[in-house]
Length: 450
Image (cartoon, rainbow, N blue to C red; front, side, top):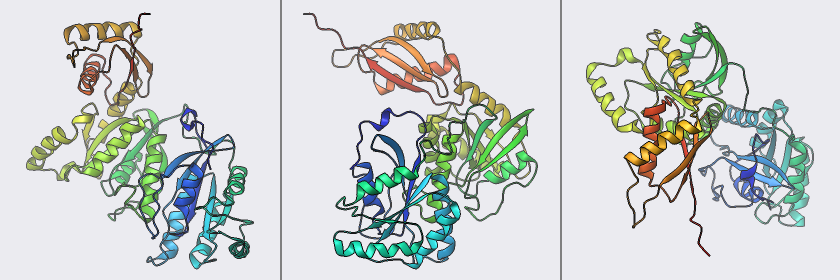
């Protein structure tokens, strides 16, 4: 269905369409239909998990983002609370909402509960009456006028029936540009406080702010929405984003956790530097490693804060050092601080660490200095010979900062190990504390003599 020339060529924010509805109404099938490829997981049972949640789409020359949201289980406990919590967060992320209802079932109590949330949001809503495969079902679809959301668009996500008209309606509902652009320019430096639930993120923000601005509770997952707070520290104003903890993989998370992890990813995207809070008394977990990977992939600066340090004894410190050497080897460049958010012990070390990380994130190496460095490096430590060939670095340039991005022109493909060696030496020579480095290779093919 989708007319997708090359969505990757688009630069800048795009409007967001959230697809919401009960389980098993065909949301993922419809998302696949909209994006023109089978990426959203489809299975004929409620609660099927999915690896990705947002996709690029293009219709009639307009590019937008589709967010495929998890369904709501009508038999779940605390249904009303679950529905409002999930729907409000999903809708708050979007510029418009595509509400999918199964026309063969009609209006259910769950559908009616979601409608209340949608009305309260004030966001434009397009109503899709799915599973309309013939004229008889089409007549049933018009019963959905009773939801009070305007005209229901009868479609068959499976067969594509009516999907063009539905997408035209979605484009009319979406603004040309998203209401909330995340690429904020100027203003206070933006810091995302991230980490698993119950590691002390909110306590840290409250201690930094000098007052209780964020609800703190020992129950994991108290914070759901990121809360932006302007805080004066070290003579500067900083914008802190306190995020809900990432408890599980997004594809395994359910309910408000699913959306909380979505919001956390959004907060990282909005930030310039992320402070990963880890409970010093607990083993560094796979979840912590996943958050680090998210930060690196987003190209954000990183500071690691080991919290609850007052509870860390000598034995735990010994094992923690071993864990850091083993698990944090990929981010040895990130400044690490030990703090106790509850008492405020050593939180004054956060600002110097943030400044150091931001400085590294924005470091630029001149082309002359970079090529002098590369020339010396290649002569002292040439690339190993592979299959009778020895690729060389011919020239290098730094094409961007925040994060630093280098392009290396080479005579052949460099080994991943040699690329890591170049990155290590770049850090030793030029700093780049607290920031990931992106290295791109461009192989120059030898011209064949005619």
